[in-house]
Length: 88
Image (cartoon, rainbow, N blue to C red):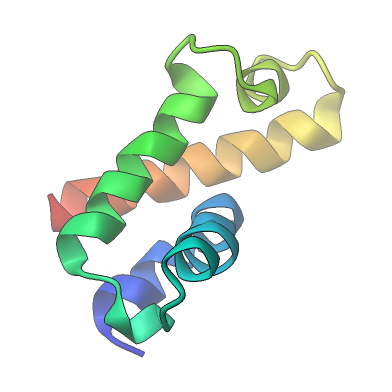
């Protein structure tokens, strides 16, 4: 697995987005996803948590679905921010 993908997989939600959404929709393998698309998807997933665009992820991040969901959301946001700092 190329390093950018390995780094992206630090976030469960970004890993899901790449594996289950992008690969499925584009009918491709993980290794076929371009670095630019991986970075774009990382920004999109971060927006789900912090962008105020109506995803349940933001509610989880704000603690509206309990402490466990919030902790997982915070972990995902931190991982995506680290990823974007390194790769964008």
